[in-house]
Image 1 (tube, rainbow, N blue to C red):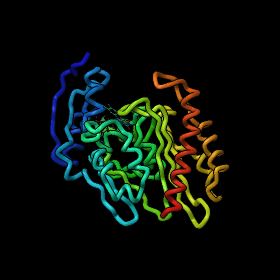
Image 2 (tube, rainbow, N blue to C red):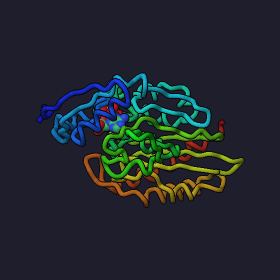
Image 3 (cartoon, rainbow, N blue to C red):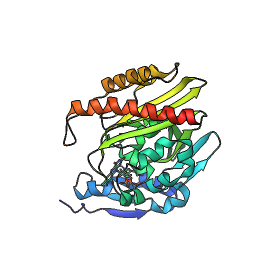
Length: 290
Ligand SMILES: Cc1cc2nc3c(=O)[nH]c(=O)nc-3n(C[C@H](O)[C@H](O)[C@H](O)COP(=O)(O)OP(=O)(O)OC[C@H]3O[C@@H](n4cnc5c(N)ncnc54)[C@H](O)[C@@H]3O)c2cc1C
């Protein structure tokens, strides 16, 4: 079935109006941003919302990348292309451009948004792993105000997030700390495809030692992208091949891939190990260069 079920269409002019519409129209209403995830699901009738609330008019309110001193703030309606093109993000967090270069293709990146990608919560989505590795926080707004939560809490399961009824994601906040390096490694079958497996690593150095680390994987877990055991294996000591190999082993041990058309579970687990190690090497090179 390639035709969506009938739905009512509304355009929100402000965030408050979008939240008001969500509240008034109830759980059968869905926001639509770039539409790259939601519309295909509607065509296949995997999603049958009765109301679509178009939030594209909110671009001036929610489409931004701002340096707020100790944090970079990214609005939920920022398009993948804007994230990819941002020199500020590339300079501060190279992992973001690494990942964006490998997400989908230009037409999807031109319309698809950060908020849509995170709220779709596809287990193979890339930005969730990137933001988890960077220790980012998601800002969710409802009628009673805002709350911010970390990316581990944000993802509650495949296609499930902490965004409640009559709430929306408005921003992602990424903390800025010095002596940072980060990298993202992904294997996919062809250009434009989703990950077979992917791994992101972020490191912060204090002198010769790794003071903090974030390691997160994509496409190898139903949900829950971060590998804290792998992070602990590298924190406290200097960067070394031995520490990276141990972290990669733990990351692979912790993941729970399923076999599908992109490959058997064992192959994905092997990729998780290899890609974690490569991402750690890349992050270290960049941290040492800063
Ligand atoms: C061919 C193809 C290949 C792709 N490859 C990749 C890939 O390699 N890696 C990857 O990570 N992604 C990939 N994607 C996914 C793509 O990046 C996402 O579909 C897109 O970014 C989703 O954003 P959107 O703005 O289109 O979301 P929409 O489709 O508009 O919305 C998706 C969901 O999020 C909800 N939503 C949107 N914005 C908000 C908000 N602010 N607050 C609360 N809920 C909200 C909607 O209600 C809906 O449920 C691919 C998609 C396609 C079509």
